[in-house]
Amino acid sequence: MNRFKAIVANFKFLESTLASRLIATQSLVLTYNQVTHFSLYTPSPFLNQPHDFHFPNIHRKLYYCSSKPNPIVELILTSNWSKGLKHKLEKCYPSLTHETVVYVLKRLEASPEKTCCFFDWVSTKKWFRASSSLYSLILRVLATKETIKQFWITLWTMKRKGFYFDEETYFPILADFKRKKMDNDCSSLIHFYSRSNWENSMRSVVTNVVDIISESNWGDGVRRELAKVKIQLSDNFVINVLRELRNSPLKAYKFFYWVGRQSGYEQNIVTYNAVARVLARTDSIEKFWSVIKEMKSVGHELDIDTYIKILRML
Figure 1 (cartoon, rainbow, N blue to C red):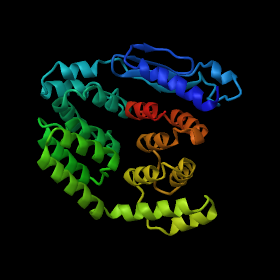
Figure 2: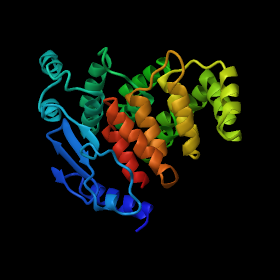
Figure 3: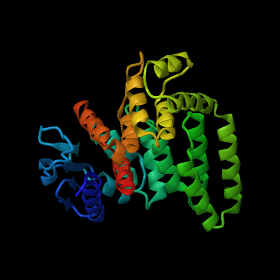
Figure 4: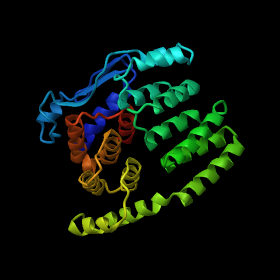
């Protein structure tokens, strides 16, 4: 079995049993306790074969997110949103890591109003780092007739804070509006998306950077050209460049590490997850695993939304 088949076989098996409390597979084991604890180990016989993925030897863990097994999802679902509930959630900190927040939001998808309340609450916390991908997750949940008002409030908030409304979010929501015969919202969304793309000043810089990287092999020449561009580095900017370079994952990898060496900017859990999504393919799988290893070494983890998307890609 070649490397691609090995990866697909293991990820597909994991995906098919994701709903269980304990998932075991030859190379990947995902367990999660309640809603805030889930782990991915790699005790695979594949590692002893010629196509070894070069995992770290320390317990050979790929993925581990740990906190006390507080049933946060159950708490939210079984309670009315109130000051009392928010007080209980406050006590969950620091268990409410970025990964846990994403996981809770995914579990709350069937309850749009509570998803919105939880996201609004967590967004006010200084320790919480919002991102385009998180806003996209919330928008997909709120794209219903019952929560359409909150959908538009969230979309405009997203724009005001400088986060990008990408096509991967836009087209599925537009299709959903059409299916539900929400004609006015369809027209408004088309107008919003078109105008946002036209107004987004960052897009021209992103396009310029992507063109520089795409047109040449990575080297001193590319770095010199990038140094000439007036770039205001932010998570949103980095994520957008990585997304545009998704068909050139090795160049995305080079850009990611170039950015990390720039003065005043430090990679974080949001950008690590973004580059992991780009690298999760056969022609860059070794870089993917090296990023996962590095994430672990600096205390970051794959969030559940990224994990599920990687499963679907494979």
